[in-house]
Length: 176
Image 1 (cartoon, helix red, strand yellow):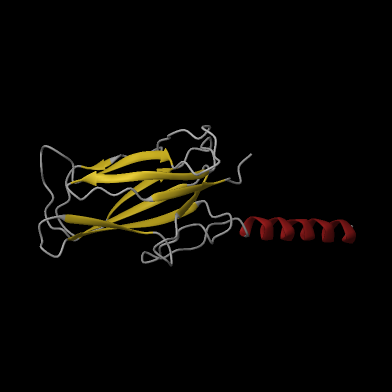
Image 2 (image 1 turned 90 degrees about the vertical axis):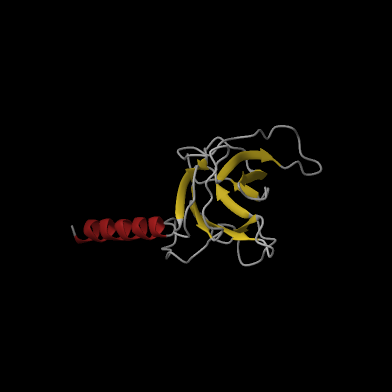
């Protein structure tokens, strides 16, 4: 009986340690994680900051992508992305166009790649913020479909801002 009990305890401990290694990191509100250096993380935070240009005529968007500006945002098939938008441009109200709109991801064609990658859409999220009136952070939680092929894609941000096309890299997820 003792040997059976020891085996059960050993298996339970090994199982809990294996599960703990696949749990996304505990992140605070200020943390931004691109996912590229977090093995197996299925939860990614992306910070979009809106600020006026030096002349105050245009609203510019920047996307935090990791420790270095050239780092891509990395997501996993079947994972989730939390986009946090901080508006420093003041009142963005225009009935003709949204304050901020996400353009769904399209493949970035790298040399030697075949045409098998297709455009895809973030799931379970709204594609726009119709109005932004203050600097209070706004959030979008979006899922990456598990059927998306791994590779480099670009998505866009447009609206009452200068349009930008940041990159996102989809990596193979840990799903069945």
